[in-house]
Image 1 (cartoon, rainbow, N blue to C red):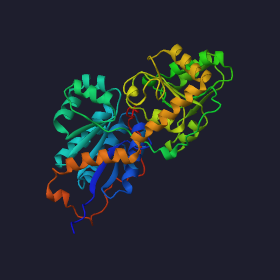
Image 2: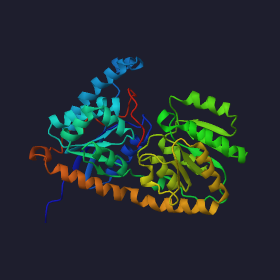
Image 3: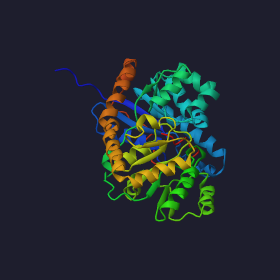
Image 4: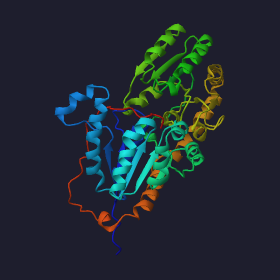
Length: 394
């Protein structure tokens, strides 16, 4: 009988769930998905490990916490990557690329491990234009660049960088699909309160919706640097029934989708937002801005409705159309739910496995036949800190 194929060992380097966002959720999906796999033994390596106890008080000091965390991160990489066949690095842009992605790539290459940069930021056009280091790393130093959308593949191609597309995955079993009948003007947005997500446009659109439907409500799930300004805007617009929920653990987010009837988002920059897939899985008709990779997963008039960027009047008009034409809204929601099949774990896992196996074939025999009796690496770290905050654009 042929010998059973040994499980590929994959180190997944990424932000922990302490940094709530699409990337962290995707990491959890991958680690959980591979846990029962016969093909892949994957483990998580946090980019933001908590340092030893004597130094933890330094995390309260701006700038110093980044240095301290980096000094903990580098030794962790050395310990965690040495037994890997493939290193899978989730990447955001700007400072996070330099502090998290670049060290992981360098350590992997020094150990002769094949490395994937799995780039998720919708800010890629500006980041690649500004950063010669990022362009060099992804052209010359990594073995594969993987992105979750055809939009990002096109962005990378414009800079002469070849990229594979593997879509984000979603566990649809976590979200209860429900037909909205009746469909009421109960809106929800789950984008964080940062400039690139332009939540102020959502509030301005809701003001117009509420002028026509006084009973309309809006739930904002998220947090960020613009929270105070957004609350002030809601007051200035004299909005009623607006609830600022704050940060919500990903394991609980389904409850908020279940309580709403329509999903809206108005980012100015985006890639492949997991929040849209979550709305699809929950049966929510979606109205979103035509930005970045959104049109790749939401065909206008098929899976939802797209409107121009920063156009609150168009957004409000489309929300009202769905409220006034509930049968149309339900058709969109049903088609959107069907589209989720392309993002379920078995489909996405097969694509990742093909990439892992292709890269692992270049690994030398002494790496491929690592001792199974060695200790588990120290990357299984439960505690994490937040020295920097990567882009949350999944």
